[in-house]
Every structure is written in structure tokens, then in C-alpha cells.
Length: 418
Ligand SMILES: [Zn+2]
Image (cartoon, rainbow, N blue to C red):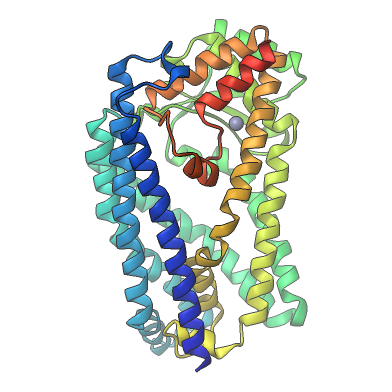
């Protein structure tokens, strides 16, 4: 009875989440369509009508595809739950008598593979049909599959020791195991963040120190001006996969690297790139990265608390098709199902993130000479190149957007200038 109630509760929340997110997509598609014939006033100076038409087309194509793949994904998950698929896999692995640890790892791998294979046609279509049609795709099929294989192997290499220690703590640390597990998880994540730029990222991309020249000089002047030490400025061959462009910081503390996509360097001028980096430094200086990390760790702590609370509650397992209690089952359940209960927090994170973006924009505008002007140029350039949606539905952007819309950012920059 309790199991049935749990399943109904989950399906209700899951259905609510699906309907709400589908509704947002439909609103967004219709909004783009209704604005199709007239360029929004703020953008008239910067964009041609052909460019605008292409961005609308791209937005609508991507949103329609998201609607379709979300629907298939939702049905797939529900079929797996109702058919008892998870329990069947779990029972099979249990029957092999491999011990709790190995059984858990193989369970993660099996579920990962099942979802990986399910999502494969969607990823292929997105990359090789949609992205290709709009001229963004630079990937070969070989590279696509190699990426997935590498990600799977790295994922297992990372999961294996993490899961080992968590399982061990559960066995030996008594009723406070989950606090210790959280502590270990935090340290482990820190360790991955430290090794990421030098060990993991190079498995996917080539990094080269930025060549001497005017751009490097400008960036170094900026770093000196804002008193920021970095572990080096690197360029990355992003063009190997896509023409979308970006710049980011990676690593932690003094070893933090600045990474510029080669695609960014081809598109923006030196002053624009420098100002984009000033924006990124603004995030660091204003401690946005640390604050976001603390928030996400609070979420992890809540996750461990909930696991501890429900770990030995059998109806939960029965509801999702399992016939025995296990640590690996509850971890997978949390990963697959918690979204149905946490999606209502999304707009709060989006709102916070957008506040940070405004602050970083302001930092760049203040620290770089004519910063507001260059940043505006950079944002417009990137928006045009990435065919960004210039007219997102207000509810859609309120709910999802981690960055203010182009209109909002330009508006804020112009206020700073004035
Ligand atoms: Zn930012």
C-alpha cells in the first residue's frame, strides 16, 4: 500500500514537472514565432533581417526537438519504472554473487548504458542534423563515439573509488555515516576539480599556451590591473567539435587556468576578448564560484540526509520495482527521480545566477577602459554567432535563463555607461 502511494506521489510530481516544462517550451516556440517578422527594437542596429530569421528558425527547431525528446525521455523512464526493469537488472546482478561493491558498480554501469543507448539517436540527431543544418557541427561520427566512450570510462574510473569509500563508510561509521560521506564527497570533488584541467580536459581537447602578441599583452595588463594571478592562459581547439564559442576558467586556487576557445579568438577582437575575460574574473573576485559551490554542496548534504532517512524503508524500493534494499539502488533512484521534486527550485537558481551575471558585467565595465562598449560588442557578436534567441518568452527566460537576455544585458551596460 505504502509502495503504491509512493509511486503515485512520484508519478504526480513527475507529470507536473513534465507538463510545466512542456508548457514553457510551447510558450517559447510560439513567442519566437509571433516575433518572427519584426526584429526587436533594441537589436535593429546590430542584426540583419536574415540573421534574425535564422536565429528564430534555430530557436524553434531546437525547442521543438527538446519537446519531442523530453516526451520520449519521460515515457522511457516511466516504462522502466512500471515494468520493474530496475529490479530485474538488480536481481540478475545479485544472482551473480559478486559482492555488494561490484554489484553496485555494475548496476551503475548497466543503468548508465541503458540511458546512454536510449539517448543516442537523440544526441546524434541534435548534433548531426540540427547543429549541422545551422553550420555549427564540426564533429565527425568517430569523434562523437570516441567522446562518449571516453566519458563512460572516465565516469567509471571516478565512480569506482568514490562508491567504494561511501559504501565502506555506510558499513563502519554508524548513524553519522552520511555526514562523513558528505565530507569525503566534498574532498573528492575538490580533488577532481584540481586534476580536471591537467588530467581530464586534455583527454578531450588540445590546450596550448596563448601565443605572445597583442592579445596576450592586453590580458596580462588586465590581470595585473585587477591583481589576479592565474595558472596560465591557454587556447583550446573547440573548433574540433563545434563553431559555438566560449571562454572559461578552470581549476581552483592559484592553478586556475584561463581557457579561450579558438572559435572565440576568430570571432572577437582583442579588446572584446579581454573584456569577456574581465567578466569571468569578476565572477571570481565577487566569489560567485565559491558561493555557487557552497549552494550545490548544501544540495549534496540534503541528498545524503535523505538517503540516510530512506535507506532502510522498503516500500520505496518496492515502488520502483526493486525487491531488496541496497545503497546502489537508492543512489540511482535519487539520481533519476529527485528532479521531479526539485524542479521548483530551478527559477531561484536562475535568478541568483542572473544577479551574478549583472555583477560580473559591471565589474568588466568598470575595470576595462571602455569596458561597457567592448562587452556590449562581444555580447552582440557572440549572440549573433550562436544564433541566440533574441525574444525568449519572459516566463521561459525567468525560469531557465542563467544569463540575462541580450536586451537586458545591453540595457544594464548602457546604464553603467550613462
Ligand atoms: Zn558570466
